[in-house]
Image (cartoon, rainbow, N blue to C red; front, side):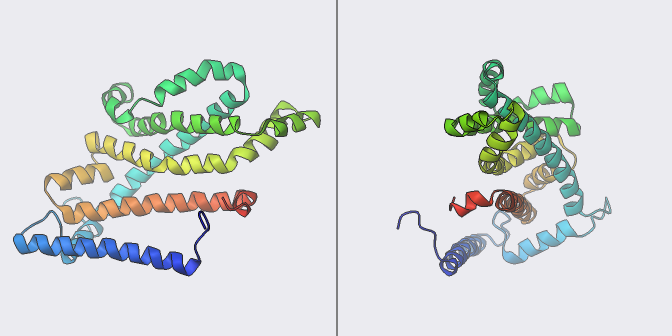
Length: 268
């Protein structure tokens, strides 16, 4: 039936087959490329990738530090603060414009404009206004995700059935009780889903900014190694970014299941 969930065993089998297809396809492409050019570095063999992973995990001869530790700490800190301030700002603004018509009239048009601004195209503005320190990376993530996330929250509020609001008012709920006990609880699953969808864009903004001016971080390392065509280092870094994004998404999904059991009982 259309939309009916698959059995767990069948789902696991399909996931295994899809991953096997990706790994097998990469192995075939790498083998064919090295038959043409044994010194090729664009599609590394598995042994070359193993050496690349070893290179990023062992201590560097010059800096005496491990690339993976150094870059992960720098990028994770920038991403954490950017997401934190972006999410907090989006929740406050989204709730305000969704609940109060005056605030909506004042800020909704500005959000609509900012949501269409590609932050990576305005990197020069962030350099001028915030410098090239940590605040610049936080700023580009914040500006990138806040308008879209706030609009998602605003639209979720507009989709709440008016009957729920009227019933709460009839039962004597104050404005704050209405916002917290009805609106926030009703839109919480959609709010978490909206945050999950912003993880990918936030990583894009961070890597683009690091690619342009950082001296440490994932974007910096990708830029440096791509110029040297060290794809045995670039590919593992890309895999680490994917895994990091999946872990964040999984954590948010777990939080959603914990806080919104009613939402998942409905099969959404």
